Length: 207
Image (cartoon, rainbow, N blue to C red; front, side, top):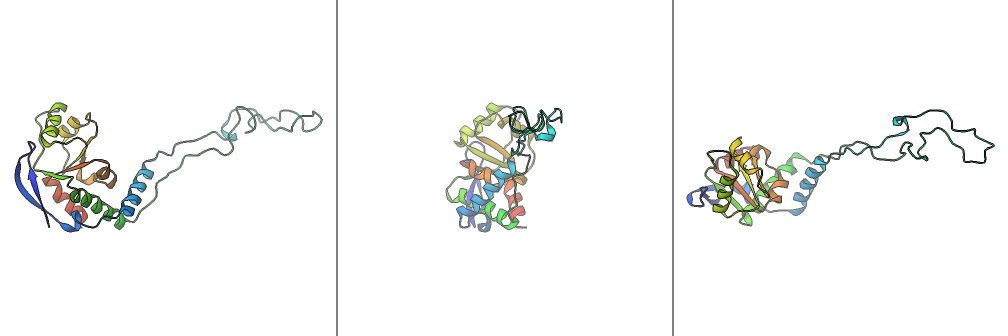
């Protein structure tokens, strides 16, 4: 098992913790990470682009003029895609871009993402993160003490004070352990785990 120092919010070491190798120290394969990140981003796409077809346009169904004898191109009604203001023939329709990746692959990618942070010495374990009140400056002071700028914090439970204190700080995000995902781990330079959240992550990935 990998042994990592546990520090407090002022940056001082208070203890050590063992991180299981099956989660935090496995070989990292970029193609697996890429597949899962691509799936996550595809699932987030809104897919709301849409156009109006002939049947969606308001207008008369009357034929504009007779078929023959005018010298003009033949025409149907005013809603033809060939006319200005008419319906669109081959435009986009609302759709879901998401697709499925096997559960085993998703869990493997999550382990690889955690392992990459530990191997690159970008993983930090905090004993706790408690603020007296909702105040952005208090959270900024914690970041300064830990010498962090672009960081993802993982908590074991809902902590409204910490979550609201951090939301206005650019390049910083607070997530609960049940929302931990590959994209966010890789997006931020540093990963900060609360000591209590480590057990939650182990329970999720070792089950």
